[in-house]
Length: 436
Image 1 (spheres, rainbow, N blue to C red):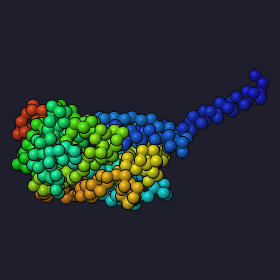
Image 2: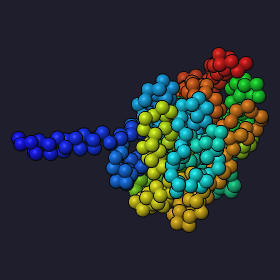
Image 3: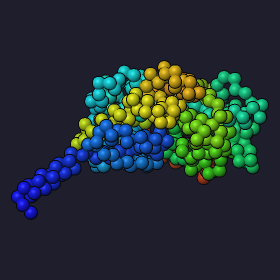
Image 4: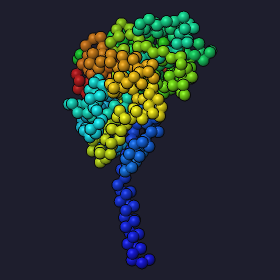
């Protein structure tokens, strides 16, 4: 090899190495919900605009995701560059210094367009620590054709007693239709998200003003009695295994007369490519009981960056892309306006194209606007949150109590035993943490 060729080859190799070194790989942990799966399919748009950044996805079931990212960020494991986290984690982790502030999302990102309730939930001391990918509350989705056939009409917001009566009428398991589908899978963000809002509706609260747990109250017994009765008797078999995704599949296959769950499900149950009953779905507010206060939850799935990451600049570019108004336009161009991630940007609910395409838009906005993390219980409470208490201990408490309530649904213990166990375990946790 002559000297000129050798020099050229060295230069070529050096350039290749430099190019390889210049590429930044982001590892993104996310939940296996439909909107996130859709985002992964659209990321060619991001990598085309950012050829120096590659993406690696870790897609997990909801409970597993929470466990993995919590362990990783608490131990400074560094496995993930971008984490999908909820409105529960963001303020707590920001306060602990575990999240990097999002201060470089771009001049055209328009932070002021984010819904105030959602923006407040992902901020700390006025700084954004995660960007919302989609926001949600909860509502009832129901089969209009089955309601009509049974002579049932909805006039105003239903109570849980009325919902129970309707579930009895619609329940025809021999025909493959169950009166109601609800979350039964144990987890603080699975069955507890629903059961806690039911507790709120029945006048219960997680803690009294002195931080004492209140699972030994009559209000909690009434709520859990209703939950185990309506789902145990008029729900699908094996309900203790069903979370959001499992119930979505049941509803879309025509097996649920009613389903009370996240408003984000609306675009999937009305999509004829995914739902057999897409043209038969109606929407209304989540049921009340003695009150409507706190009867529907408030949540957002958000993208955040662990503090100490060496890839903050690249991670912020990705988060800006995935949560921008331009991303909504991208989804609309590929999947239609009805399928864009809902509940985060005010401009979406002023967009006539979206309002025309999404028959559930008004109900979704009503539910989100009515969910108040401060005033979410009939009696005074010391915590912030509708379906959770925004304290570090709640994740463990909610997981344990969720398992006890799931056991009651399965008939492995009585409602009274489940509530007694919930009271005892939560009391131990709160005493150990020094609340009283």
